[in-house]
Image (tube, rainbow, N blue to C red; front, side, top):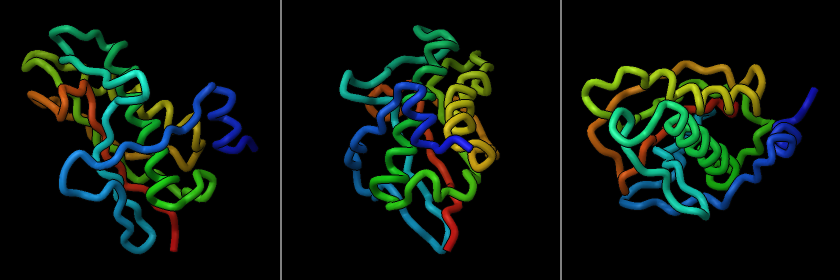
Length: 154
């Protein structure tokens, strides 16, 4: 069986040092065996992926943003949740917020950028429930924001 670290390496992904909170919240809260990961934006050392689906972004652009935000979710789990990826029992749910025009209806396809990465990295433990929402705007003009609930056991 391939470990999450091996999959990340194969994909050429190095988990970043997570961004500090932008407001009055903590990045990860643990309650029992669950981690609640605060919304993560699609940012890295090159900056933030900004835009609005249906206006100035294509679905493929949104998927790339969702993928990057999912990488940041994984980074938060490790750094601020204190849990190595191989100890994750199950990603319970992802909530994916997509900055979009009112007539854009492909939020589910944008969200696949995150869901597919999580499943690829974590295998069966990465199979999750999901909701994808269209919203008028996100912090700092981000195209996507993702929050997660993750079972890490007792």
